[in-house]
Amino acid sequence: MVEEILYRIKEMELMYQFMMIFVIGFIPFLEAHVAVPLGVLLKLPFILTTFLGIGGNIISVLLLVLIVTLIKDKLNQHDRYPSINRRFAKARHYFDKYGVPGLALLGPIVGTNHISTLVSVAAGVRKENIVLWQVISISIWGIGSGLFLFYGIAAYQW
Image 1 (cartoon, rainbow, N blue to C red):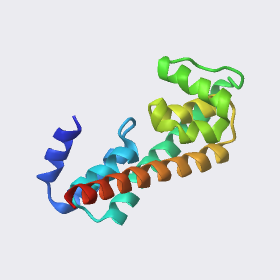
Image 2 (cartoon, one colour; image 1 turned 60 degrees about the horizontal axis):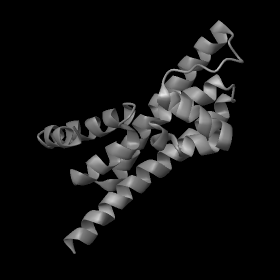
Image 3 (cartoon, rainbow, N blue to C red; image 1 turned 90 degrees about the horizontal axis):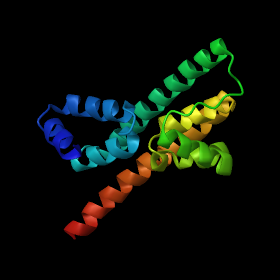
Image 4 (spheres, helix red, strand yellow; image 1 turned 60 degrees about the vertical axis):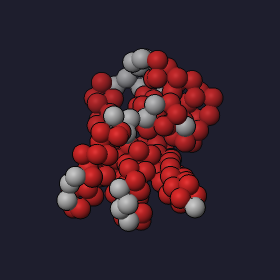
């Protein structure tokens, strides 16, 4: 799937390639840790690619926090923990064990930062804490995966 996305983006004009990095960062399960390495593979400028991938991911998580918080406040379900599927249950386990920072940093391992955000909101964590730790997590995973691939390619070519 990623190869097909890479091939299709490679055929686009430069401006559309940058837009696609932002969009891929916005999409759950792809996020910044996929968008930034795709930009590296496309040989796009690393700093701009990183900002676009991370920016798209952060905006989608912020929107999710706002929407879910509004829905939760409307339904007034402060003490319930929804169980959607296995990934949500896994995320809930990590939340109970490590709290918001651990869950946010393990977001891509759980499945996506969006699931860890949903678990945090459902657990009644303050929006500010969720946003802070999600921004930190998305930045670490986006920059880390991009640098890993960037220097991995350089080492391979050497």
